[in-house]
Length: 203
Ligand SMILES: N[C@@H](CCC(=O)N[C@@H](CS)C(=O)NCC(=O)O)C(=O)O
Image: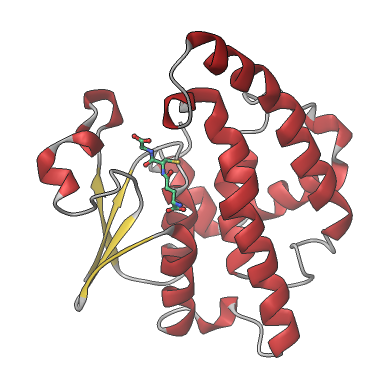
């Protein structure tokens, strides 16, 4: 059975919700309160000290986008468009989420990755509402509805979901993005997302 190292309120929720779409899997919760992700035992599983890690029969896999793509090629092909351009469009948004929007968010709590001075952290933190709002403004017109690319969700929808749960605490005025709000409601109507919420992965 697939196992996932994961923690509430993190990007690992993307994989939790995707797995809940139809895979038998087991959660191994990493206790961020105890900084378990920084301990040697966890670093032997993922030297990057991050979640998620998917443990497959052939070995451990890290990086949300790579894990989602693996699931799309194995257990969840329905979450991957058949048309090459549509598939690339899905990846276009997944790369954006991984390299830009998630990184924007990380500037709130993880400034020590990039700087050493408290004033730098304060500056980075103060910028988060602006950069996350800009990311929402980029996404809003792209949303076809009810899902990102239309009637069916793709891997990109699951990647976006955890990030969408961070917006209010990141200082985004979510009322300014009605398509994003409707999209989030559509995701939350899915049994997979409901299960993740009731299992405590959103907070
Ligand atoms: N690029 C990685 C980023 C993973 C990542 O940054 N995860 C965060 C949670 S959202 C984490 O584990 N942080 C732990 C830490 O910084 O100590 C991915 O998408 O999987």
